Structures are given as structure tokens and as C-alpha cells.
Length: 148
Image (cartoon, rainbow, N blue to C red; front, side):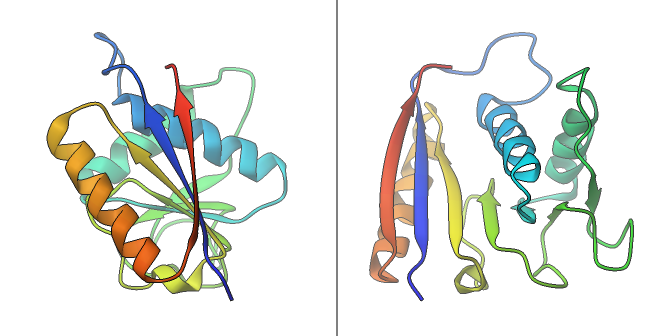
């Protein structure tokens, strides 16, 4: 099975006063869109703090919509349609939204990967490393520039 990966290249830095970094906001909006399309999504993060930031943002970023989600270890037995965590998800999820600096070692479990290239140089370098790693895994990779 071939992994399909899409890298979103952000053209602007984070907006001052925003509660989360621009790529976290785009990840939450992507998760909402994927949920509405009937997909089960796993958002992979580096830390508990990042998980809580994404969790909180999903509660309040769109006032007129609800995205059923949970942090790993919380919620229903099989997890909500959108799960956020640092460990492999329980159950089948087809889409990985990667907000971590590294790809998880369980990346092959997913059919599609969403990843982000922030403006900040260290984050951009880490994204290049993930891109090269996915290429070595034989992933079909596309990019999309985002004028956030």
C-alpha cells in the first residue's frame, strides 16, 4: 500500500494574538473537514502541552460547528472520530495529521498523511527531514502553498 502525503507550505508566520501557531490552526481546520467527510483522524503531537492546545482549539475555532474529538486515553472506547496524542492510536484510523517534529514510527499504519512546513527556520528544516523520510518510504508526496 502506498502512503499519500501532503505538505502544506505556510507562506506567513504566525499571526500575533492567535491562540495557536498557524499550522495548528490549519491542522484543526483540516481535521474538521476530514471529519465532515466521514474520515477517522489521528493528530500526532510532540507533547502533552501541544495536545491540550489542539484540543482546546478544536473546541472553539469554529463557533457554529462541533468536531467530536478526544485526547488519547479519554472519550469512548474506540476513540472519537478525531483523536490527539503521542502514542499509536487504538483502532483503525486512515489519516495522520502530523504536528510533531518527527514522523512517528507507526506512520505506515495510515493511508494519508498531512504535514506542515511553517515559516520558522528550525521547523522548516524538520519538515524537510520528514519529507525526505517519507520519500524514502516510497510515499507519493504533494505540496500545497497556503497564504494564511
